[in-house]
Length: 277
Ligand code: NAI
Image (cartoon, rainbow, N blue to C red):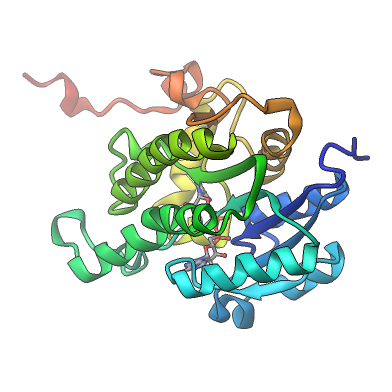
């Protein structure tokens, strides 16, 4: 049962591919909380994924857009305002892609064209989205923009590859654009650093299953699920968090504050080599 936290609010939700997508859960919950919104993804994702099922379920129109294309973003923002009947109150940027990760390239042997694409799609695209909205004056006062990040932006995770740099760019844009949009129109911009979550994108990361289990055992509250993320995200879209901006908010069951946990200690079998001098 919803609490009408988003009643009367208009939004845009990027990145729902199928029902394992984090954005999918946010859309379901935003609908339950009384919001109206449009859904967006690439033309390819529209063909390959299940977004039209979600569209039916949430009575939300689907507008294709490549988040790296200014032309597509302008069209999306114009069309969304036209369909929803006014300026936008919230945006979820739940987008990420790395060909280097997909191709399982070693970090010491990355393809640079693919590296730039990773930065463009997974980091810079947030700036493109915000700058386009800023110039079009498409967001309402106290509007809220939420993007997803991972702790690999700040610490080395051996298989996160060039996504680490893309997320570092993303988190920096949150702070810097957060200042400018706050001054202009009190718009809030935050990133949420989420636990490993079982989605199609995640399963591509080499060794994800082991990593997922490790993170769960390190976190006193366990891994945060996509549903947990949706709950948190709704509060960030709502009027309950009007003065929260320019933050990287950890939503990870406590993982980011841990050093080692009993669960991990008990499951780690010491290698006899460690005791050799
Ligand atoms: P997902 O694969 O369901 O979502 C990623 C979405 O990005 C897809 O819908 C894809 O079509 C879209 N996308 C890719 N290139 C695009 C482009 N050029 N234009 C527009 N959309 C494009 O996977 P998931 O896990 O829901 O990922 C959502 C976000 O959460 C990503 O930013 C990811 O890095 C982040 N995240 C995921 C975690 C996980 O373990 N699954 C952990 C922390 C953050």
